[in-house]
Image 1 (cartoon, rainbow, N blue to C red):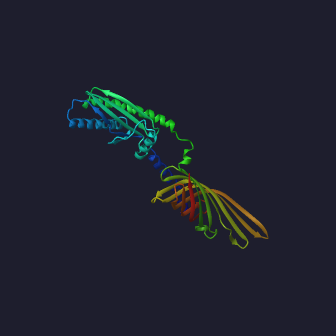
Image 2: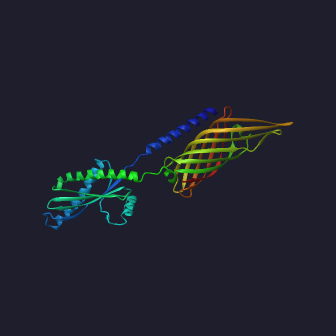
Image 3: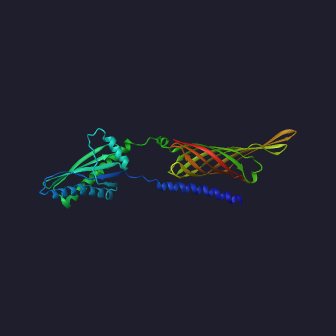
Length: 354
């Protein structure tokens, strides 16, 4: 019965690890750079319109219809992630702080590119100037298109503008990819690596309950975040029991060291707390020494390498982005050939992210 339970536990470890990695792979997708299209400014009009009402209507029409058409073409035909803004940003190329302003707009609106422009109509000839603002590299590109057609036939010139915008976006993305290529040591500065240590007070259970004393378990560990809630953890356990007398003439010393690899699952509970579940498997190296006193001192030593199970369930208190206090319960199991050694306890720990 005990062996069946142990087999189920081992299979559960692999199942959780595979499922956790699969879920992370599904969520890891590259998002395209977002483009924000603003209304175009109508600069002047020398049309045959004589009334102020008709002039205002014409102005509103072109200021809205040009960017609205670009918005649809860029998203549907060229596959860009585009958002529409019904205003015009206050940006000028001669502004000395233009780079700072672009980065702020990009951060506040979560966009990488801004598309603005202006249009002029002179005797039924329309001239459209389009400007692309790069919020990452602060690059600015402008171009002009003119046409003798207005009204419904205006779609032809808008198609040309959209094609040019798409071409410029592709070029700027390639430039930024080289310009802002990540450093090979970047993960070390993104709070992805964690170092921690746990100290647990544990007590043996089952067959070994009356053989070995309760004592402390020391666990240093290193982790790497592979998702928002999943972390790959390598840990090292050291456990040594106090001598427990078997008889007046004999004592038994027992210690083991274990190395494990597994996953930690963290579930946020508000701003400062995480619920933590960790499960991993590995190998334990055990050393048992029996000392007997029968006139002379005789010792017998037994060593073995066996499968090992480690599990934790606890609560993390985040003091800041880099430091967390940890507490909870632990379970350990060494799968010996004859009688498995398992124990449980509670732990306190500290974790640093960098």
